[in-house]
Length: 363
Image (cartoon, rainbow, N blue to C red; front, side):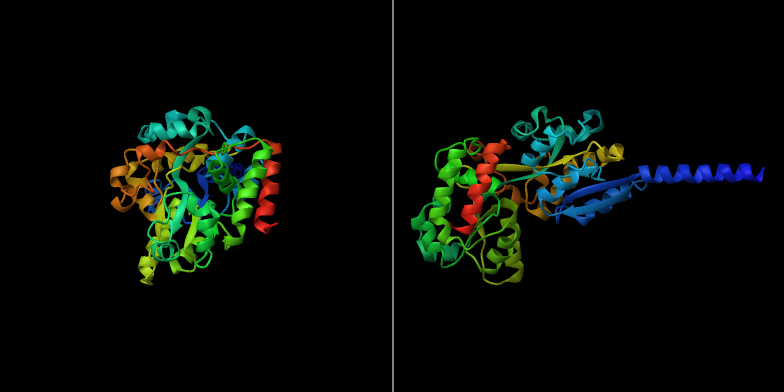
């Protein structure tokens, strides 16, 4: 009898352990991309869920985990171009919209743009979005180029007669061939998503002309440097300049950071919430995603990270300094000039990689 009871007890303990493991929710998101309060409130509202929240800093780091087929996570946040490749690779579960009642808060116009990477919006939910634009120090740019500096145009970067005068105060570009080369193609009047290797040779030639005037390529260093006054112009992510402007104000260092969404247009990107096929706890993954779709939850996150969110019913709750800034929340007219980036075929990807290697080395 005692042995029988012991066996029952062991079985109960094992069952409890399995149940506890099933209620563990593992989320993998970008660094510094959510408010601590949002996480605390989720835990308080869902005490039965043990939340493990990890961070990454590049799409490549996330993709390396996803392509193993067993990332260990229930919710991940790839950018839309990477999402498209990962959908093709069969990485994600299709969404069950019945478990996302807050889906109706999403902006249909933005959802239509996302279909370029996720046809039918079948696999992912947008979290934040932004554009590639120009951030600058108004005083230093004026000193270099005068009152008529074309800060609202890609001419500021791609015309040697402009960027050459900015070299003295410092110019940084994203270390991202998938985002900078489309801008060069666009400036040349070519398809930003060109699959023609010859087009990348033309983009390479354009960038090599201005390469002597570029201080460095980096995907995060420019935020601190422009806030400190160490550089005067950068091509980077919209929200990063919002954060840089706030840092400069907090430091009271006399530096002003401004930004412009160029009139010619720019790439628009989305960071997406998705559930991997190997997720052990998809049920609570839906609970977490649906929680983030609440306007009162996502609006303060936008305030914190400096990026707009795709929740149409949250806009009025976002800090006016962000939602009324047309460089962060694009106007209807600006939206018509924006475009999503798409994955390249292998031939074009190799051409782009070769071009970027030459551009960075300056040869």
